[in-house]
Image 1 (cartoon, rainbow, N blue to C red):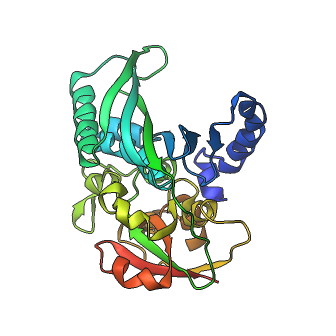
Image 2: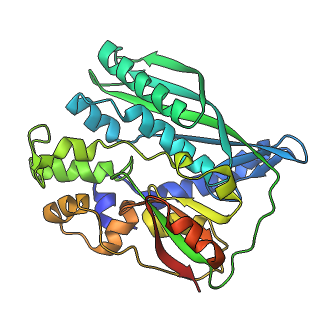
Amino acid sequence: MSKLYKKSGVDVIKTDNLISQALKFIKTTHNPNVLGNKLGFSAEYKVNKDVTLCSATDGVGTKAILAAELNEYRGIGQDLLGMCSNDLLCNKASPLFFLDYFACSAVNPKQYTEILKSLTKACKKINCALIGGETAEMPSLYQENHFDIAGFLVGIKNKQKLEKIKSGDLIIGIKSNGFHSNGYSLIRKIINDNKIKVKSAKFNNKKLSDMLMRPTRLYHQLISISDLKKIKALAHITGGGLIANFKRSIPKNIKFSLDIGKLPEEYKFIENNIEISKKELQEVFNCGIGMVIVIDKKNYKYFIKKTHFKLIGEIE
């Protein structure tokens, strides 16, 4: 795991180990209807022999701090939904309803309203009902104007036949819309160490703040229910990067080769301001690929003509 990410305050390996230990007693709460987290991204709960509920929960990480510092919230609600809905999609589930948790020192009307408007717009994009939530004011816990936001999404899927992944299957990457909501502890370290004034800074003749605050892409908009029938596995590329997240979606004994090609322009900002290898970039960021799918070779022409889809590898 990236040493730079650890220096910025994020120790992924330590956290993963803690979660593994916690699962030992968490699983004592399960009943026979709990199908676990076999596909690596969302939990599943059997309703009957044909229908399964799926659930995902997440936040936007320290992108929330950058949003507060920039007073820019128009995409944060979509970030929140996307982090949950893209995980849900990996289990081939359609979203049903969403709940949010918003915590702050004291409610700032502009901040609160813009975040909820962003969340509402995002929910409409993927036909998901925003049915409730919690707003908590905790002045002794949060700095003035700072906040945290988390969400919980429930979806549904019908019984599906799972196709085995085999040698020769193709790995398709679906492009991201920037950094999404991951790697921001390292991004903020870069900003602070280099004393970059994000509000006024430019990158490639564009506002740096606009590049950093692009909202997470909602992949339910790009992958239909009929598409899912042609897909063998999906991986949402978030914290931990491309390789680690892709491995979560396939059997352990499967070998593969990946080549994502040229990195998008935003990664020049990272490389220009900190010494980092391509390997470390791929351990922290999505590197321009926000979702990965595995398909049979016969379906290549169908998927490759879609906007934002590109071939990045093959199952060996």
